[in-house]
Image (cartoon, rainbow, N blue to C red; front, side):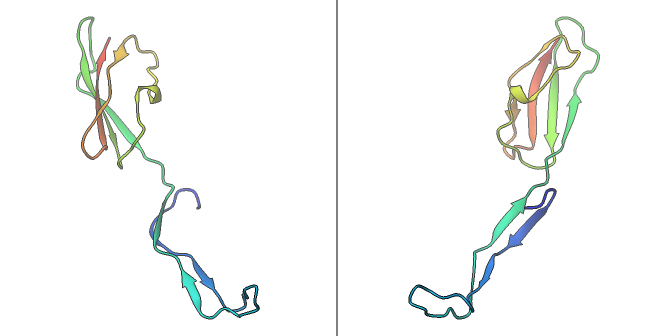
Length: 105
C-alpha cells in the first residue's frame, strides 16, 4: 500500500472474462475479496512530565500519549538524551494509547 494512507474499506476484484482453465473453459463474471483495511499512517506521541524541576531523590510520572493504540512499545524504544536518571517500566492503559512510567534522576 501507499505510505501515509488510512483506508478502512478495500476489496480486490478480478474480472474472470478472458481467463481460461486448463480444460479451455472461459471464466464468467467476476470474483471479489472480502473487505480489508490499510493503515500506513505512523502513530504520533506527546510526552508530558508531572514535574519538570526535579532534585536528587525525587521522581515524576512520565505520560506518553499516542494518537492511536500501539503495541510492541517498551523501554528500548525510549532514548533519554542528556538525562541523568532512569525510567521505570512502561504501563499502558486498556486502550494502549497512554503509557506511563516513573522517571527518577
